[in-house]
Length: 422
Image (cartoon, rainbow, N blue to C red):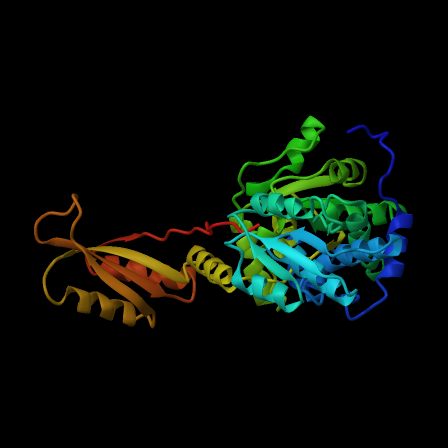
């Protein structure tokens, strides 16, 4: 993109969106909370968590959707709206449309979390389940509007959507006018585009950092090549930012107003989700935790700064929460899987169980494994899954088993892989 490309969204558009977002039952000013824990972990002077996940729908998405639909109503009659989403945009469009008296149809992938499907219907939308990914849902949603007067509400490729999301940038500035760095998750780029446009006008000296999940990162490659890049598939637990593509509109704004883009791994996102629960008492989804993950990573230096990471979504699927918990507890060795080589005769399981119990550790599961080529006749492995208080406790258990004459190996495997519901 050329830096000379005219602005398709400017601060006046954001101000107009603010005037439209005049119903606090649809969009409210979300709070900011200081985190001394994250200050200590990052050496930042001050960390202000912007708690947008406490928005009515659990996400910022209602801002853009409401601005878009209300702007369409100002221009004339709207014969319904159609959108494609696996969750947060779906709920934002549904709430906005219902509040404004407009019928909405939301196309969602078949593997979208049931809680998000139910919530979207609860806000008054008709939900159609199509395909197994966001791209399939998007294609069908666009087909639904062909030959009709229904308005398609894109998740990010629309100036009205970007301007609506930009109202969050104004809030962030009002919450902390002297903030040095704001950290914003990126999926399709509508959120970071709106926020960056707001800060470009209100506080151009503030650094705007965008964050993508590395398994769905399109912005770095798009910036390198100067045109939007797309991915055939994505691999991230942060389904809210797993669009697999950006648009010419959002890329042009990112080029102009976003200072830096970093990526974070599934493990970094999972750790951030758990840290936010433990230390900040905030329950956020993967996309919502991505900004904190970036702030804690080696790729982003915020030492000595006042930094504001944006927690943009709180619709955490319980299945994903379980996966994230198991992943993090396994990495911390609070869930410990041990393989112990034994002579396969009575009493060995009881003996080893007593060794573990002497350390006040709880055995969750245990099984024999005899059908392995490296075992001789009369040998077996016992596979224990044990709850511990942490790495030190785990090491004491391992040493004690070894001191009793057993060969013991840690066989923890950590993964947050799962089907992505964009």
